[in-house]
Image (cartoon, rainbow, N blue to C red; front, side, top):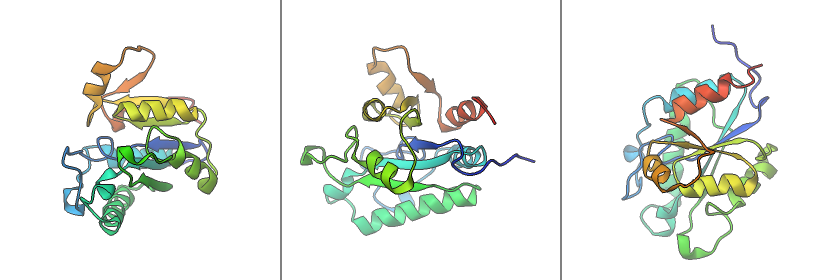
Length: 189
């Protein structure tokens, strides 16, 4: 039997969506039917929950700003994701997205801190020191901007992101399942 720790007792884990939880597409995920989880990602989120972490999704979704999908369709995609996580035994503490295009100049599009600051206000978790798992340079930059611990996965754009990086002090894992397993092992209660 898996020991379950109080949800959120170990703080939050901030997760990018596309390329980390689900397969990404250069044409954007435009429908709930196109949203397909990466093998092991849903179980990894459930394991993080059971270990006392509160998973929070923070995702740029410029397809809305580009007119490729509506806010209502994005909500349906997020509902599908939440339901899939729940079916695997997990729970997302929150889902935050930026609908703006890169040239909009907003304060919420990663690597800007807006979504994370909103999460901190609304959910009460601190991003400082919290793991932030992503596959793009903007995820790593966001982690640094908010004082989180950047973790790169090789899924999605992770392999190409890794090739662009010049630093060597970065946790890198094959996928969310490996990253989650490592986090759970660290300082287990």
